[in-house]
Amino acid sequence: MNDIEKRIEELTNELNYHNHKYYVDDAPEISDFAFDKMLVELEQLEEKYPEYKKKNSPTVRVGGEAVKSFGEVHHDVPMLSQQKAFSKEEILDFDRRVRAVVHDVNYVVEQKIDGLSVSLEYVDGEFTRGSTRGDGINGEDVTENLKTIKSIPLTLKDDIPFLEVRGEVFLSRDNFNKINDILEASEQPLFANPRNAAAGSLRQLDPKIAAKRNLDIFVFNIQQIQGKEISTHIEGLEFLKEQGFETFTLSTESCDICEDCAYPHGKPCRHPDRMHPCLESHGVVVSEIVEKQQMEYNLGGNTILWFSMVLFK
Image (cartoon, rainbow, N blue to C red; front, side):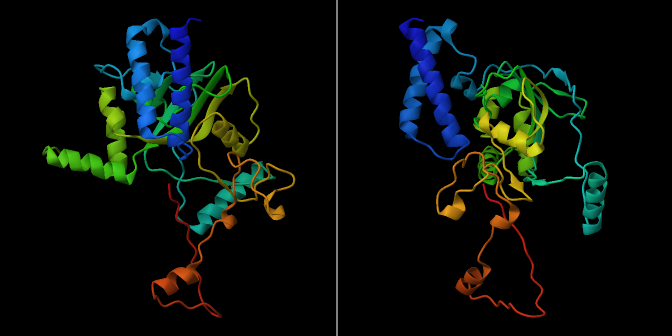
């Protein structure tokens, strides 16, 4: 390996690392200026020496050439829709049906993101194809647009022969408002809601437009995997997190990664990147909030308590 190829590889690995720290871990380690300086250097080297450009180069995040249409993709594992429950009775009935088949049950609670469902495929650890859900059986090939989403790893941590995961592409409220402000200023029709905007952005024929929309993704299921045994859903989510995917997981049971949890001993979590706290570990001190806002608040006998959870990203 010559010095040019070595430098391109160094820049590629370092920029991908900082992309993950910024967009997935929310823990940037360098300034935007330092990042942009390395990115410009890599772009210049790749332009001059295209034969050394890596498949997982962060420069693909800015978008490639526009296409005339999207190719069709057949889903080997159907991307089915979720069944909705509107009452306590429906939830209990679901639980009864599950326990009739699986007797030892622990539930995993995840965010329901209102976006566009997609499939991501990896061969030998490299991101090779991404597609929309479509009708559940056939979707559209939107690989180049998905590459512009910085929270999607282009290379997995492990060299997995084949992996297909399902996730939900979405648009944050802030980015949604920014896009509509731009559209309004240019007197173009506005998007009705963030989901509509996410779907429209992902299906742009020009990846450069998709790149400007700052889409994000949560991955929530393994569709297919080779070279790795996964026995439970929570184990699968932990594996996906280890590979660099963004997931959000709460459990109905306490985190059981460690036999002896460090928290009761006054020590920090040994595996903060893998922990999955239970619902009961999340709470808000309501009394302090209402007192600060001078709201009426009653707590005592014959009082109905309403509980809720607000999830922030």
